[in-house]
Image (cartoon, rainbow, N blue to C red; front, side, top):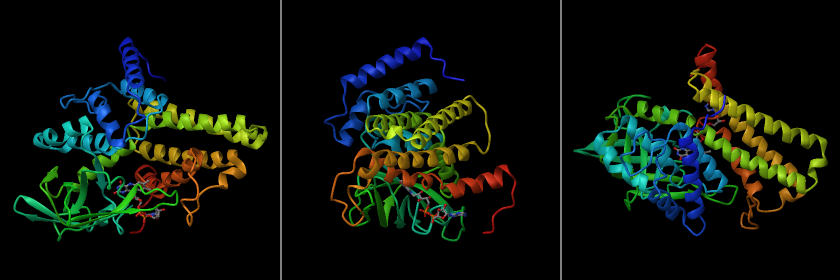
Length: 376
Ligand SMILES: Cc1cc2nc3c(=O)[nH]c(=O)nc-3n(C[C@H](O)[C@H](O)[C@H](O)COP(=O)(O)OP(=O)(O)OC[C@H]3O[C@@H](n4cnc5c(N)ncnc54)[C@H](O)[C@@H]3O)c2cc1C
């Protein structure tokens, strides 16, 4: 099965390509680029609702936009969490007033969001969240610590999973709150420096931070949070594969240019990588074709996470000795990392976020194979 592009899709592709050509990302800050995309109406294509200043597109057109964006080598999106996680969650669970307040700003590229789920004692075991939300009239006061919060240092708002009923245990008594980040003295963001030398993640400390919006009603945070995680694993797979294809192409070109391609084992690995990417694409298309299988999201995550790590390892093998030149954890400023070194380092995280490999296998074990639940 492949996408059947109709005339409207070809017209849409032409429009996307022309817009991207006329509006290069170079010269924009990450925020400036979000605003540029917003002004062009390109944020929110997949929302299914177009009342917020955004265009809407069919599934095929969303893939077309992803293809053209990758082809134009558009940068990683600062607005990803707002557009692809927060907005669909509000559309599914939010009140009309919440949609009207938050979605237009996401569509304009004006407000940047971060995701406040994980805590030092609650990662895979998210129901162990200890951050509290104490009601004070119509306001909640949020207190506790989040960790690994991507982009918190840039974000205007954070959606936070917190315990609004201190008596309730585990999945009960949690609420999904929308917290403005500009609250000096009540919110502190501390960047975490990674082995790549950069610091995209943060620890976020809340000390009585105020929030007035709860999505899905007080105490229903678990259902809202799980709805959001299902979105995180689902729709963007095909578009993500376009980026993978670009990266694999870069590794193949380097192998050819550097003569590494004369190594027969490396050739085998390159072709295997290509064949597996095709298989993942067919699988994603099959899933979009309407087949539902309770194990499918976990299988997809397991396949792409390890595939991308192997690509990182392959990239370093192709680079040979040059791959080890550059920064180290103890001297991170020694050299700038090149794209392939960065690919290798960042891909180590692919089997952790969005549900680690072990958690995906546990889901399959219990929900598909019917194995007994693992001991608590
Ligand atoms: C790139 C990246 C971006 C992230 N961005 C965000 C963000 O923006 N916001 C946010 O809230 N969080 C974010 N996270 C955090 C992410 O959600 C957690 O890292 C993830 O849920 C795992 O939790 P943990 O790190 O606490 O590890 P743990 O849950 O402590 O797991 C440690 C190890 O034990 C294994 N393990 C745990 N439980 C079991 C079990 N029951 N059975 C078998 N094995 C088990 C895990 O698979 C893992 O290998 C990000 C993480 C990464 C890597």
